[in-house]
Image 1 (spheres, rainbow, N blue to C red):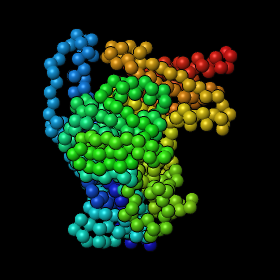
Image 2 (cartoon, rainbow, N blue to C red):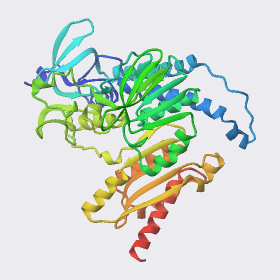
Image 3 (cartoon, one colour):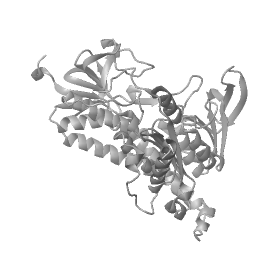
Image 4 (cartoon, helix red, strand yellow):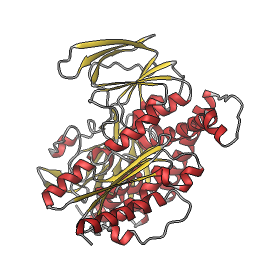
Length: 484
Protein backbone atom coordinates (compact mmCIF):
# COMPACT_ATOMS: atom_id res chain seq x y z
CA UNK A 1 0.00 0.00 0.00
CA UNK A 2 1.52 3.35 -1.03
CA UNK A 3 1.68 6.29 1.37
CA UNK A 4 -0.84 8.22 -0.71
CA UNK A 5 -3.45 5.50 -0.25
CA UNK A 6 -3.48 5.69 3.56
CA UNK A 7 -6.17 7.70 5.32
CA UNK A 8 -3.59 8.87 7.86
CA UNK A 9 0.12 8.65 8.48
CA UNK A 10 -0.61 7.75 12.11
CA UNK A 11 -3.66 6.66 14.05
CA UNK A 12 -3.46 6.68 17.85
CA UNK A 13 -5.96 4.60 19.82
CA UNK A 14 -6.47 6.34 23.17
CA UNK A 15 -6.21 10.00 24.19
CA UNK A 16 -4.55 9.76 27.59
CA UNK A 17 -1.15 11.34 28.16
CA UNK A 18 0.62 8.67 26.12
CA UNK A 19 -1.71 9.06 23.15
CA UNK A 20 -1.86 12.84 23.50
CA UNK A 21 1.91 13.32 23.44
CA UNK A 22 2.31 10.87 20.58
CA UNK A 23 -0.37 12.56 18.45
CA UNK A 24 0.86 16.08 19.18
CA UNK A 25 4.51 15.19 18.57
CA UNK A 26 3.67 13.45 15.29
CA UNK A 27 1.51 16.30 14.01
CA UNK A 28 4.16 18.87 14.89
CA UNK A 29 6.57 16.88 12.73
CA UNK A 30 4.36 16.96 9.68
CA UNK A 31 2.43 13.70 9.96
CA UNK A 32 -1.30 13.47 9.23
CA UNK A 33 -2.67 12.18 12.54
CA UNK A 34 -5.97 10.91 13.94
CA UNK A 35 -6.62 10.05 17.57
CA UNK A 36 -9.49 7.76 18.61
CA UNK A 37 -11.01 7.99 22.09
CA UNK A 38 -14.12 6.24 23.42
CA UNK A 39 -14.32 8.18 26.68
CA UNK A 40 -13.16 11.63 27.79
CA UNK A 41 -10.14 13.29 26.24
CA UNK A 42 -7.18 13.08 28.60
CA UNK A 43 -7.69 9.50 29.69
CA UNK A 44 -7.31 8.28 33.26
CA UNK A 45 -4.78 10.86 34.44
CA UNK A 46 -6.79 13.93 33.53
CA UNK A 47 -10.26 12.62 34.32
CA UNK A 48 -9.97 9.96 37.01
CA UNK A 49 -6.38 9.94 38.28
CA UNK A 50 -3.45 12.33 38.67
CA UNK A 51 -5.26 15.61 38.08
CA UNK A 52 -8.40 15.32 40.25
CA UNK A 53 -6.66 13.39 43.02
CA UNK A 54 -3.96 16.06 43.33
CA UNK A 55 -6.66 18.74 43.49
CA UNK A 56 -8.30 16.84 46.36
CA UNK A 57 -4.93 16.37 48.05
CA UNK A 58 -4.17 20.09 47.73
CA UNK A 59 -7.49 21.10 49.31
CA UNK A 60 -7.48 18.46 52.05
CA UNK A 61 -3.83 19.27 52.74
CA UNK A 62 -4.81 22.87 53.49
CA UNK A 63 -7.45 21.59 55.90
CA UNK A 64 -4.89 19.34 57.61
CA UNK A 65 -2.39 22.19 57.91
CA UNK A 66 -4.92 24.64 59.37
CA UNK A 67 -6.29 22.01 61.77
CA UNK A 68 -2.85 21.15 63.16
CA UNK A 69 -3.00 23.53 66.12
CA UNK A 70 0.13 22.10 67.76
CA UNK A 71 2.21 22.71 64.65
CA UNK A 72 0.83 26.23 64.14
CA UNK A 73 1.32 27.17 67.78
CA UNK A 74 5.03 26.39 67.38
CA UNK A 75 5.12 29.37 65.02
CA UNK A 76 3.06 31.44 67.45
CA UNK A 77 -0.02 31.13 65.24
CA UNK A 78 -3.44 30.37 66.66
CA UNK A 79 -6.11 29.60 64.07
CA UNK A 80 -9.87 29.37 64.54
CA UNK A 81 -11.54 25.96 64.18
CA UNK A 82 -11.36 24.85 60.55
CA UNK A 83 -14.52 24.70 58.46
CA UNK A 84 -14.68 23.28 54.96
CA UNK A 85 -17.33 22.61 52.33
CA UNK A 86 -17.10 19.14 50.85
CA UNK A 87 -18.91 20.13 47.66
CA UNK A 88 -16.60 23.06 46.95
CA UNK A 89 -13.58 20.81 47.43
CA UNK A 90 -15.12 18.34 44.97
CA UNK A 91 -15.93 21.22 42.60
CA UNK A 92 -12.30 22.36 42.72
CA UNK A 93 -11.25 18.94 41.42
CA UNK A 94 -13.95 18.71 38.74
CA UNK A 95 -13.32 22.27 37.52
CA UNK A 96 -9.61 21.54 37.20
CA UNK A 97 -10.39 18.39 35.21
CA UNK A 98 -12.66 20.33 32.84
CA UNK A 99 -10.03 23.04 32.33
CA UNK A 100 -7.16 20.67 31.59
CA UNK A 101 -9.32 18.42 29.39
CA UNK A 102 -10.45 21.46 27.39
CA UNK A 103 -6.88 22.74 27.05
CA UNK A 104 -5.66 19.34 25.93
CA UNK A 105 -8.41 19.04 23.30
CA UNK A 106 -7.73 22.53 21.93
CA UNK A 107 -4.00 21.79 21.80
CA UNK A 108 -4.59 18.73 19.62
CA UNK A 109 -7.01 20.61 17.37
CA UNK A 110 -4.55 23.48 16.94
CA UNK A 111 -1.86 20.93 16.09
CA UNK A 112 -4.05 19.62 13.27
CA UNK A 113 -4.88 16.25 14.88
CA UNK A 114 -8.21 14.74 13.79
CA UNK A 115 -10.18 13.71 16.91
CA UNK A 116 -12.50 10.74 16.41
CA UNK A 117 -14.90 9.81 19.21
CA UNK A 118 -15.46 6.08 19.35
CA UNK A 119 -14.07 2.68 20.30
CA UNK A 120 -10.92 1.90 18.32
CA UNK A 121 -9.63 -1.59 17.53
CA UNK A 122 -7.06 -3.33 15.36
CA UNK A 123 -8.44 -4.82 12.13
CA UNK A 124 -5.22 -6.08 10.62
CA UNK A 125 -1.91 -4.67 9.43
CA UNK A 126 -2.18 -0.87 9.21
CA UNK A 127 -5.97 -1.03 9.64
CA UNK A 128 -8.11 0.35 12.46
CA UNK A 129 -11.81 -0.16 13.05
CA UNK A 130 -13.82 2.49 14.88
CA UNK A 131 -17.26 2.06 16.42
CA UNK A 132 -18.41 5.65 16.71
CA UNK A 133 -20.69 6.93 19.46
CA UNK A 134 -23.62 7.07 17.01
CA UNK A 135 -23.18 3.34 16.35
CA UNK A 136 -21.65 3.69 12.91
CA UNK A 137 -18.75 1.32 12.33
CA UNK A 138 -16.02 2.29 9.89
CA UNK A 139 -12.53 1.29 8.88
CA UNK A 140 -9.48 3.51 8.55
CA UNK A 141 -5.96 2.89 7.31
CA UNK A 142 -2.68 4.33 8.53
CA UNK A 143 0.97 3.84 7.79
CA UNK A 144 1.54 3.40 11.54
CA UNK A 145 -0.73 2.69 14.50
CA UNK A 146 -0.06 3.39 18.18
CA UNK A 147 -2.10 1.65 20.88
CA UNK A 148 -2.47 3.87 23.95
CA UNK A 149 -5.70 2.56 25.47
CA UNK A 150 -4.62 2.91 29.10
CA UNK A 151 -5.83 0.99 32.14
CA UNK A 152 -8.74 0.57 34.55
CA UNK A 153 -8.92 -0.14 38.30
CA UNK A 154 -8.52 -3.79 39.25
CA UNK A 155 -11.32 -5.22 41.37
CA UNK A 156 -10.35 -8.60 42.90
CA UNK A 157 -12.74 -11.57 42.82
CA UNK A 158 -15.27 -11.57 45.64
CA UNK A 159 -15.59 -7.79 45.77
CA UNK A 160 -18.83 -6.25 44.52
CA UNK A 161 -18.86 -2.56 43.66
CA UNK A 162 -21.88 -0.27 43.45
CA UNK A 163 -20.06 3.02 42.86
CA UNK A 164 -21.54 4.49 46.03
CA UNK A 165 -20.65 2.43 49.11
CA UNK A 166 -18.02 0.22 47.45
CA UNK A 167 -16.04 2.02 44.78
CA UNK A 168 -12.68 2.43 43.05
CA UNK A 169 -10.53 5.53 42.64
CA UNK A 170 -12.57 6.33 39.50
CA UNK A 171 -15.54 7.19 41.72
CA UNK A 172 -13.55 8.37 44.76
CA UNK A 173 -12.30 11.46 42.95
CA UNK A 174 -15.90 12.75 42.79
CA UNK A 175 -15.92 13.02 46.61
CA UNK A 176 -19.71 12.65 46.62
CA UNK A 177 -19.78 12.02 50.37
CA UNK A 178 -17.52 11.57 53.37
CA UNK A 179 -18.04 8.21 55.10
CA UNK A 180 -17.62 8.25 58.85
CA UNK A 181 -15.61 5.01 58.57
CA UNK A 182 -14.04 3.84 55.32
CA UNK A 183 -11.95 0.76 54.61
CA UNK A 184 -9.26 1.10 51.95
CA UNK A 185 -8.22 -2.14 50.28
CA UNK A 186 -4.53 -1.83 49.36
CA UNK A 187 -1.73 0.35 50.74
CA UNK A 188 0.07 1.35 47.57
CA UNK A 189 0.27 4.94 46.39
CA UNK A 190 -3.46 5.17 45.53
CA UNK A 191 -4.52 3.86 48.93
CA UNK A 192 -2.06 6.11 50.77
CA UNK A 193 -3.12 9.24 48.91
CA UNK A 194 -6.81 8.66 49.58
CA UNK A 195 -6.10 7.81 53.22
CA UNK A 196 -4.39 11.20 53.38
CA UNK A 197 -7.47 12.89 51.88
CA UNK A 198 -10.07 11.11 53.99
CA UNK A 199 -8.29 11.50 57.34
CA UNK A 200 -7.71 15.21 56.69
CA UNK A 201 -11.46 15.60 56.13
CA UNK A 202 -12.37 13.80 59.36
CA UNK A 203 -12.97 10.21 58.26
CA UNK A 204 -11.79 7.14 60.14
CA UNK A 205 -9.79 4.77 57.92
CA UNK A 206 -9.02 1.07 58.11
CA UNK A 207 -6.34 0.01 55.65
CA UNK A 208 -6.38 -3.65 54.58
CA UNK A 209 -3.26 -5.07 52.93
CA UNK A 210 -2.92 -8.65 51.68
CA UNK A 211 0.87 -8.67 51.89
CA UNK A 212 2.68 -9.05 55.20
CA UNK A 213 3.29 -5.31 55.73
CA UNK A 214 1.59 -2.06 54.80
CA UNK A 215 3.25 0.00 52.06
CA UNK A 216 4.88 -3.14 50.63
CA UNK A 217 6.07 -1.49 47.41
CA UNK A 218 8.07 1.22 49.17
CA UNK A 219 11.65 1.10 50.43
CA UNK A 220 11.71 -0.44 53.91
CA UNK A 221 13.62 2.41 55.57
CA UNK A 222 11.31 4.96 53.98
CA UNK A 223 8.27 2.94 55.08
CA UNK A 224 9.41 2.78 58.71
CA UNK A 225 9.70 6.57 58.89
CA UNK A 226 6.72 7.47 56.70
CA UNK A 227 4.36 5.05 58.45
CA UNK A 228 4.80 6.88 61.75
CA UNK A 229 3.49 10.12 60.24
CA UNK A 230 1.13 8.96 57.50
CA UNK A 231 -0.54 6.11 59.38
CA UNK A 232 0.35 5.75 63.06
CA UNK A 233 -0.22 9.41 63.98
CA UNK A 234 -3.54 9.57 62.15
CA UNK A 235 -6.93 7.95 62.55
CA UNK A 236 -5.81 4.93 60.51
CA UNK A 237 -6.02 1.31 61.60
CA UNK A 238 -3.98 -1.21 59.59
CA UNK A 239 -4.69 -4.86 58.92
CA UNK A 240 -1.78 -6.50 57.07
CA UNK A 241 -1.49 -10.10 55.95
CA UNK A 242 -5.24 -10.55 55.45
CA UNK A 243 -7.31 -10.74 52.29
CA UNK A 244 -10.60 -8.91 51.75
CA UNK A 245 -12.10 -12.05 50.23
CA UNK A 246 -15.70 -10.83 50.14
CA UNK A 247 -17.20 -7.35 50.16
CA UNK A 248 -20.93 -6.71 49.85
CA UNK A 249 -22.17 -3.13 49.25
CA UNK A 250 -24.87 -1.68 51.45
CA UNK A 251 -25.50 0.23 54.67
CA UNK A 252 -23.30 -0.96 56.27
CA UNK A 253 -20.80 -2.53 53.87
CA UNK A 254 -19.92 -6.06 54.96
CA UNK A 255 -16.33 -7.32 54.64
CA UNK A 256 -15.00 -10.82 55.14
CA UNK A 257 -11.29 -11.05 55.92
CA UNK A 258 -9.46 -14.28 55.13
CA UNK A 259 -6.06 -15.72 55.85
CA UNK A 260 -3.94 -15.16 52.74
CA UNK A 261 -2.55 -18.70 52.69
CA UNK A 262 -5.40 -20.88 53.95
CA UNK A 263 -8.22 -18.59 52.73
CA UNK A 264 -10.06 -19.35 55.99
CA UNK A 265 -12.26 -16.51 57.25
CA UNK A 266 -10.50 -14.86 60.20
CA UNK A 267 -12.67 -11.79 60.80
CA UNK A 268 -15.70 -9.82 59.64
CA UNK A 269 -16.14 -6.06 59.52
CA UNK A 270 -18.92 -3.59 58.90
CA UNK A 271 -17.99 -0.11 57.65
CA UNK A 272 -19.73 2.81 55.96
CA UNK A 273 -17.78 2.56 52.69
CA UNK A 274 -14.94 0.74 50.95
CA UNK A 275 -12.40 2.11 48.48
CA UNK A 276 -10.83 -0.64 46.37
CA UNK A 277 -7.26 0.47 45.64
CA UNK A 278 -5.69 -2.80 44.52
CA UNK A 279 -3.90 -1.59 41.43
CA UNK A 280 -4.79 -1.28 37.77
CA UNK A 281 -5.19 -3.59 34.77
CA UNK A 282 -4.61 -2.80 31.08
CA UNK A 283 -7.56 -1.87 28.90
CA UNK A 284 -6.94 -4.27 26.03
CA UNK A 285 -10.00 -6.50 25.92
CA UNK A 286 -11.76 -4.59 23.09
CA UNK A 287 -8.72 -3.99 20.89
CA UNK A 288 -9.19 -7.13 18.75
CA UNK A 289 -5.52 -8.00 19.23
CA UNK A 290 -6.23 -11.54 18.02
CA UNK A 291 -6.57 -10.16 14.49
CA UNK A 292 -2.76 -9.99 14.45
CA UNK A 293 -2.24 -12.98 16.79
CA UNK A 294 -0.87 -10.74 19.53
CA UNK A 295 -0.54 -12.60 22.83
CA UNK A 296 -0.70 -10.44 25.94
CA UNK A 297 0.91 -11.10 29.32
CA UNK A 298 -1.90 -10.70 31.88
CA UNK A 299 -3.46 -8.27 29.44
CA UNK A 300 -0.29 -6.25 28.87
CA UNK A 301 0.99 -5.80 25.32
CA UNK A 302 4.65 -6.83 24.88
CA UNK A 303 6.89 -4.10 23.42
CA UNK A 304 10.60 -3.58 22.84
CA UNK A 305 12.65 -0.60 24.03
CA UNK A 306 11.52 1.40 20.97
CA UNK A 307 7.80 0.77 21.73
CA UNK A 308 7.27 -1.68 18.85
CA UNK A 309 4.68 -4.39 19.56
CA UNK A 310 6.14 -7.90 19.68
CA UNK A 311 4.89 -11.39 18.83
CA UNK A 312 7.12 -14.06 20.37
CA UNK A 313 9.94 -11.52 20.47
CA UNK A 314 9.53 -10.47 16.83
CA UNK A 315 8.57 -6.92 15.90
CA UNK A 316 5.23 -6.27 14.19
CA UNK A 317 5.80 -3.73 11.41
CA UNK A 318 4.06 -0.37 11.88
CA UNK A 319 2.40 -1.25 15.21
CA UNK A 320 3.39 0.40 18.48
CA UNK A 321 2.08 0.51 22.05
CA UNK A 322 2.64 3.06 24.81
CA UNK A 323 1.43 3.79 28.32
CA UNK A 324 -0.26 1.55 30.85
CA UNK A 325 -1.06 -1.16 28.29
CA UNK A 326 2.66 -1.97 28.12
CA UNK A 327 2.83 -2.70 31.87
CA UNK A 328 6.24 -1.08 32.31
CA UNK A 329 5.87 1.87 34.71
CA UNK A 330 2.19 2.74 34.95
CA UNK A 331 2.73 6.48 35.32
CA UNK A 332 1.43 9.37 33.20
CA UNK A 333 4.88 10.79 32.55
CA UNK A 334 6.14 7.35 31.49
CA UNK A 335 3.29 7.11 29.00
CA UNK A 336 4.08 10.58 27.65
CA UNK A 337 7.75 9.69 27.23
CA UNK A 338 6.87 6.41 25.51
CA UNK A 339 4.53 8.27 23.16
CA UNK A 340 7.17 10.69 21.91
CA UNK A 341 9.75 7.91 21.67
CA UNK A 342 7.41 5.79 19.52
CA UNK A 343 6.84 8.74 17.18
CA UNK A 344 10.55 9.52 16.95
CA UNK A 345 11.16 5.94 15.86
CA UNK A 346 8.33 6.21 13.33
CA UNK A 347 10.07 9.32 11.99
CA UNK A 348 13.28 7.34 11.61
CA UNK A 349 15.09 8.76 14.63
CA UNK A 350 16.03 5.71 16.69
CA UNK A 351 15.32 6.22 20.36
CA UNK A 352 14.86 3.90 23.32
CA UNK A 353 13.52 4.49 26.82
CA UNK A 354 15.48 4.43 30.06
CA UNK A 355 13.04 3.25 32.74
CA UNK A 356 15.69 3.47 35.45
CA UNK A 357 15.74 7.27 35.25
CA UNK A 358 11.94 7.75 35.47
CA UNK A 359 10.88 8.97 38.93
CA UNK A 360 7.69 8.13 40.81
CA UNK A 361 5.94 10.07 43.56
CA UNK A 362 3.20 9.63 46.14
CA UNK A 363 1.62 12.98 46.98
CA UNK A 364 0.85 12.44 50.63
CA UNK A 365 1.68 15.01 53.32
CA UNK A 366 4.69 14.68 53.47
CA UNK A 367 5.45 13.17 50.06
CA UNK A 368 7.30 10.00 49.06
CA UNK A 369 9.35 9.64 45.89
CA UNK A 370 11.79 7.26 44.27
CA UNK A 371 13.86 6.73 41.14
CA UNK A 372 16.10 4.00 39.84
CA UNK A 373 16.74 0.70 41.58
CA UNK A 374 15.31 -0.48 44.86
CA UNK A 375 17.78 -1.68 47.48
CA UNK A 376 17.07 -5.34 46.68
CA UNK A 377 17.47 -4.71 42.93
CA UNK A 378 20.73 -2.85 43.55
CA UNK A 379 22.04 -5.72 45.70
CA UNK A 380 21.17 -8.22 42.98
CA UNK A 381 22.98 -6.10 40.39
CA UNK A 382 26.01 -5.74 42.67
CA UNK A 383 26.16 -9.51 43.13
CA UNK A 384 25.75 -10.12 39.39
CA UNK A 385 28.29 -7.51 38.23
CA UNK A 386 30.75 -7.97 41.09
CA UNK A 387 30.81 -4.53 42.72
CA UNK A 388 30.16 -3.32 46.26
CA UNK A 389 26.93 -1.42 46.84
CA UNK A 390 27.07 1.87 48.69
CA UNK A 391 24.13 3.14 50.75
CA UNK A 392 23.93 6.50 52.52
CA UNK A 393 21.09 8.22 54.38
CA UNK A 394 20.62 11.97 54.52
CA UNK A 395 18.14 13.29 57.09
CA UNK A 396 15.91 16.35 56.86
CA UNK A 397 16.49 17.05 60.57
CA UNK A 398 19.94 18.36 59.59
CA UNK A 399 18.50 20.68 56.92
CA UNK A 400 18.00 24.38 57.75
CA UNK A 401 14.99 24.87 55.46
CA UNK A 402 13.17 21.83 56.85
CA UNK A 403 13.87 23.05 60.39
CA UNK A 404 12.57 26.53 59.50
CA UNK A 405 9.36 24.94 58.21
CA UNK A 406 9.16 22.72 61.32
CA UNK A 407 9.00 19.80 58.87
CA UNK A 408 12.19 17.94 59.73
CA UNK A 409 10.61 14.48 59.55
CA UNK A 410 12.29 13.19 56.40
CA UNK A 411 14.93 10.95 54.88
CA UNK A 412 16.80 10.49 51.62
CA UNK A 413 18.36 7.12 50.89
CA UNK A 414 20.95 7.04 48.10
CA UNK A 415 22.19 3.87 46.36
CA UNK A 416 25.45 3.96 44.39
CA UNK A 417 28.39 1.88 43.17
CA UNK A 418 31.38 2.08 45.50
CA UNK A 419 33.81 1.40 42.67
CA UNK A 420 32.73 4.07 40.16
CA UNK A 421 30.33 6.16 42.23
CA UNK A 422 27.53 5.79 39.69
CA UNK A 423 24.14 6.68 41.17
CA UNK A 424 21.81 3.67 41.00
CA UNK A 425 18.71 4.87 42.84
CA UNK A 426 17.22 7.13 45.47
CA UNK A 427 14.24 7.06 47.80
CA UNK A 428 12.95 10.16 49.59
CA UNK A 429 10.33 10.80 52.24
CA UNK A 430 9.75 14.35 53.37
CA UNK A 431 8.65 17.85 52.45
CA UNK A 432 8.52 18.30 48.64
CA UNK A 433 10.03 14.87 48.01
CA UNK A 434 8.26 14.73 44.64
CA UNK A 435 10.19 17.79 43.45
CA UNK A 436 13.52 16.80 45.01
CA UNK A 437 13.67 13.44 43.24
CA UNK A 438 14.00 15.05 39.82
CA UNK A 439 17.59 16.12 40.46
CA UNK A 440 18.56 12.52 41.14
CA UNK A 441 16.53 11.29 38.17
CA UNK A 442 18.49 13.61 35.90
CA UNK A 443 21.80 12.33 37.26
CA UNK A 444 20.72 8.71 36.71
CA UNK A 445 19.63 9.57 33.18
CA UNK A 446 23.15 10.84 32.48
CA UNK A 447 24.71 7.93 34.41
CA UNK A 448 26.60 10.41 36.53
CA UNK A 449 28.70 9.56 39.55
CA UNK A 450 28.73 11.06 43.02
CA UNK A 451 32.32 12.13 42.28
CA UNK A 452 30.92 14.47 39.60
CA UNK A 453 27.82 15.52 41.52
CA UNK A 454 29.49 16.32 44.84
CA UNK A 455 30.95 19.58 43.50
CA UNK A 456 27.61 20.99 42.32
CA UNK A 457 26.62 24.01 44.43
CA UNK A 458 23.11 23.92 45.93
CA UNK A 459 21.18 27.00 47.06
CA UNK A 460 21.19 27.63 50.81
CA UNK A 461 18.93 27.27 52.63
CA UNK A 462 16.89 24.85 50.54
CA UNK A 463 15.72 21.27 50.82
CA UNK A 464 17.98 20.40 47.88
CA UNK A 465 20.89 20.40 50.33
CA UNK A 466 19.56 17.05 51.59
CA UNK A 467 20.70 15.65 48.23
CA UNK A 468 24.02 17.53 48.38
CA UNK A 469 24.72 15.98 51.78
CA UNK A 470 23.95 12.50 50.44
CA UNK A 471 26.45 12.98 47.62
CA UNK A 472 29.11 14.15 50.09
CA UNK A 473 28.50 11.17 52.37
CA UNK A 474 28.75 8.84 49.38
CA UNK A 475 32.14 10.26 48.34
CA UNK A 476 33.44 9.90 51.91
CA UNK A 477 32.26 6.29 51.92
CA UNK A 478 34.03 5.66 48.59
CA UNK A 479 37.30 7.11 49.85
CA UNK A 480 37.05 5.15 53.08
CA UNK A 481 36.38 1.99 51.08
CA UNK A 482 39.46 2.55 48.87
CA UNK A 483 41.66 3.31 51.87
CA UNK A 484 42.47 6.83 50.71
